[in-house]
Length: 78
Image 1 (cartoon, rainbow, N blue to C red):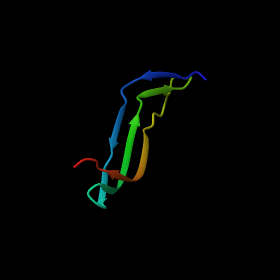
Image 2 (cartoon, helix red, strand yellow; image 1 turned 60 degrees about the horizontal axis):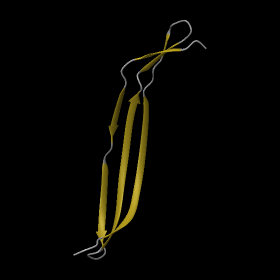
Image 3 (cartoon, helix red, strand yellow; image 1 turned 180 degrees about the horizontal axis):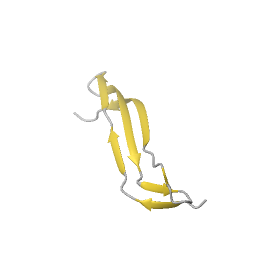
Image 4 (cartoon, rainbow, N blue to C red; image 1 turned 60 degrees about the vertical axis):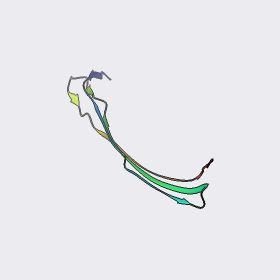
């Protein structure tokens, strides 16, 4: 396999909106929940060529993640 790579400029784009809520049980303890969505696009910028010198398609990768957090908080002090 006579692959060659030529480095060129790549990119990364990330959008990550988040939202959260907290419910105070009393002045010292709270329950919390959060929702986070991550959308990421990236291209490392490497251009690949086959053995004949023809460029192979350089694709952009996309990742999407959704996360949920649940927890509690204890507040110390006055």
